[in-house]
Amino acid sequence: MKVRALCILSAIALCLCLFGCGVQPDEIATTGEITSAEITTTEIATVEQTTAQEPLPWYEAIKDYAFGCQVDAQGNFYYNDGEQGIWRYKADRLEAECVIPEGKLCSIDEKYLYYVTASRSIMRAPLDDPEKKEVLVTAQQLGIDDNEFYEDFQYYLLRIELHKNILFLQWHARKLLVYDLNKKRVLSYLPVLPAM
Image 1 (tube, rainbow, N blue to C red):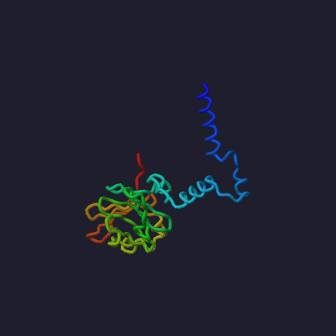
Image 2 (image 1 turned 60 degrees about the vertical axis):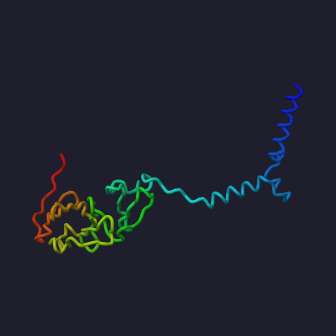
Image 3 (image 1 turned 90 degrees about the vertical axis):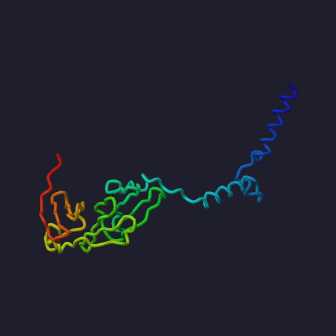
């Protein structure tokens, strides 16, 4: 029994020594002594400042652009970032990069990114090398350069599809334009039918 009481008293004494015998932080500042409590706090603050921020998971990084996102075969996300062009979020590296500084993304396929520029040109660029962009057709070639309906060409162009050199362009969910890239002429303007 005496041994047990002695062990308990020793444990209490050890705790009091380790935890500063009840000294408050403001008392430490007034005495001018540096204790282990102050060093630990400083070390923790330094570690917190030097630790790099963890990259955001993909769903957090693209949540503001989720409804306009296009995804390629590698799982990379492509999206418009307002006036800052077209961005690619690399899912394997958890980082985003601007791939087209000027333009609005309309669609992607297995190989290409299709977009429209403020200069009213419809472009495509390879997904693996966006710098190698090419002009597919301009608003002037489509015969809609002066048309009031297409005044805000870049804003209302929603989707671009290319099938065997036939370019399909969808505006504002109401018009579909079909253009033959080989013959360099418009094949038809069609109203878009509502989905059933």
